[in-house]
Length: 200
Image 1: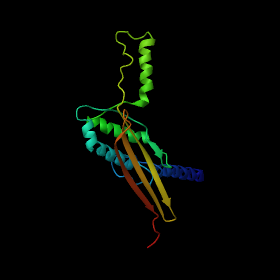
Image 2: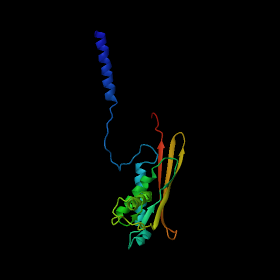
Image 3: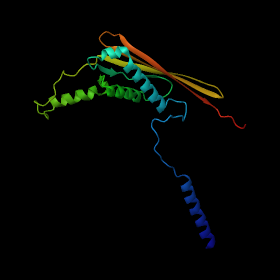
Image 4: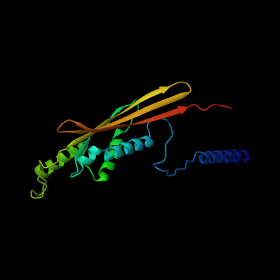
């Protein structure tokens, strides 16, 4: 009987100890802190390219002329990801468009939601559920004057001791009527990972 009680007690002790050892702790961190988990494209890189390109566009003399008496209407084409990584380029364009909207100098058309808007207008007119005097009219949406588009590319090199990744982010602003590119800029990021030496 004593052996059974001893085995049961030891078993419970091991279960409790392993449960305590595996307990994880969750903490909030600084969303703007530099992230160095690995050399892949991360949150710090996203924030850096979005901030640098937005500032460059807003400080451009060409944009100063464009926005002098009006707020030009822009749409952003989804960025082309030419890297070997899966990168959420929509998050980059969201950050850029949000910063440009906050500047008060531009207005945007969300091309990703145009179909949903069309369906809502169709519902208001064809569904018989909306008072015709309060239904929005077709043909009154504003067209974009400019298109913002760009590419994210990378070059990756590695050997036994070192890995190196180079990112280049290019952005352009095109006048849709003339086809002329009124503004362009690019920013670069290089990240290196070196294997730690063992011993002294």
